[in-house]
Amino acid sequence: MSGKLIVLEGTDASGKSTQFARLCQYCDDRQISYRRLVFPRYEEESSALIRMYLGGEFGSHPDDVSAYAASTFFAVDRFASYRKDWKDYYENGGLVLADRYTTSNAIHQASKLDGEEQNAYLDWLFDFEYRIMGLPAPDHVFFLDMPTEAVHELLIHREGKSTDIHEKDIPYLQRCYQTASKLADRFHWERIRCTKNGSIRSIEAISNDLIGRFAALIEK
Image (tube, rainbow, N blue to C red):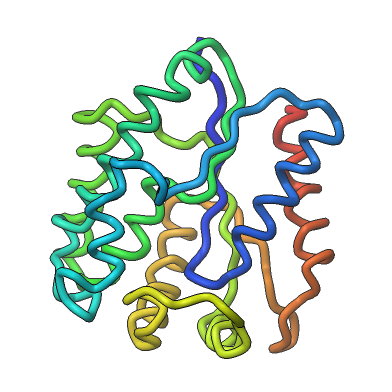
């Protein structure tokens, strides 16, 4: 009996790490049994190529590395995590919460392509990870809908944290948001609105929205 895999997605600097921590805290406070995943796993050997890519060792712009090549870097890290850490738990009915997943490749790498090339890439990506590599597909995806203008504002006010080649490229982030919004509609990801009337909603308001929808989902 397979478990349930719930993914929290969003573009860079959308507040995803903060909201994921709050979601996990909600589960902890209510003694809900779950497994917590955060991708990429920068501290693990399986993320070596990811660190090189995001660090600019293969080129200073995201488009310097093809969508297909970059996707394999992230997929290998997920494969190692699944086979070593949570495969048995998930296959025995466990609840798994993931901060990013294959859906992040869909957002960030598909944004390097247009039209039919983008569609062909998405077909390849999901077949590669879910069928060939044997990773489970998510049961539900929550998408933090943070427009790029708001993301840019958050990046400007970040302190003490360096940016990778994705975050440094604002036009690329704009393409990622447009792609993510399109994918959310196409694949029925559940949107969590992070702005209201052009202003960023409070962390608490976004969290209450996310947790309320999560609670309703797992109670089904």
